[in-house]
Image 1 (tube, helix red, strand yellow):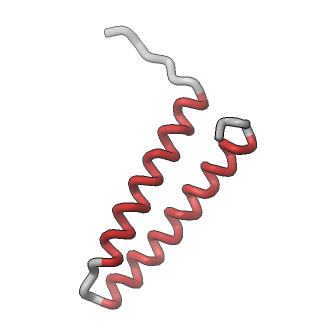
Image 2 (tube, helix red, strand yellow; image 1 turned 30 degrees about the vertical axis):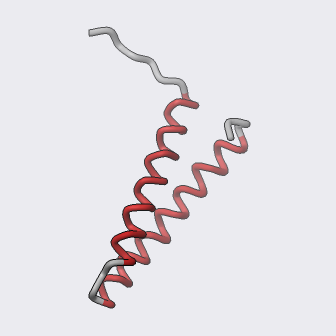
Length: 66
């Protein structure tokens, strides 16, 4: 099986795409949560995931990749 070499840009682009999907999923869970306590936990996680997404986006901008 041939090995694939991914560039830094490929990797960070995949990271951003993954974070977008993760935040979308947590957003859905928070919106459809019946328990206020559980919703609060999902909102905390969602906020953390949005911060990660922003950090990745900022790094891509800094490198001229976005």
